[in-house]
Length: 296
Image 1: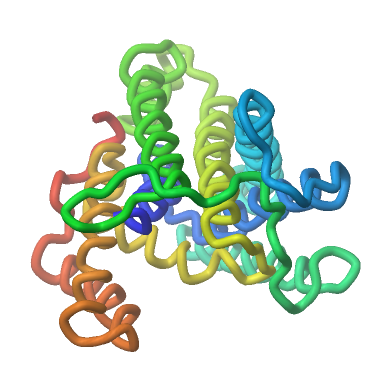
Image 2: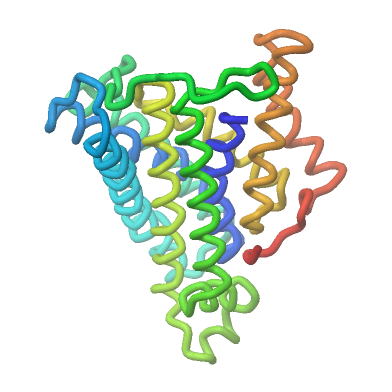
């Protein structure tokens, strides 16, 4: 379920952009990677943290890691919207052009970070700011403090996003734009600002996921976003892309399916089973478990 929670958090970025633009942001995996790498540099290279933190300092450190990653990923998502999406929107480009541009941006960012002056080709050890310790036992499975951190952070992010979308003026603008662009413009909605806000929100949660990934797996890499990104997209489709609560449900279901396959048929089949979910959902229930809509 821990993997499922991470997939769900990344899937929120796909869901947000699709809900507004009706386009798949295939560069979101790079946004996720940027968040994790930014946290690695700030807390590993700049602050030089090598020993686990404790007490109040640990709480501040965790909040700092998550915020650094979230802000860096939001900045990356904003740059992505400005450079890869907005010029195409101004020219009224075909939907295929957006898809190609997003894939190109993803490959560009990914292989840029592979260069030695940024991250390099191998994995880099994430700062050990939190020592792993057992928290409690659930159904004969030991749950550690990092697992608990992921669950709490993801649930909190979902609650905050749900309230933003359903109870704020920004959320009303996003929902209006997802329903009808022309009508939203006539009602005074600033389309470009709402789209940028959508990318910022999606990038923010993608960055949080990148930091949680680094903390949990103790490493970051230039290609760390590819597999989780594709699985998060699968989770978004499974839950109902464009549906925020559906993204959470889809992530949890996909995580359970993937790990049950490990138990039943072996770890070498985990990715095969996980990726088989996508075509099966598109064939038998294209709208996903909860349907397509930007609200809850």
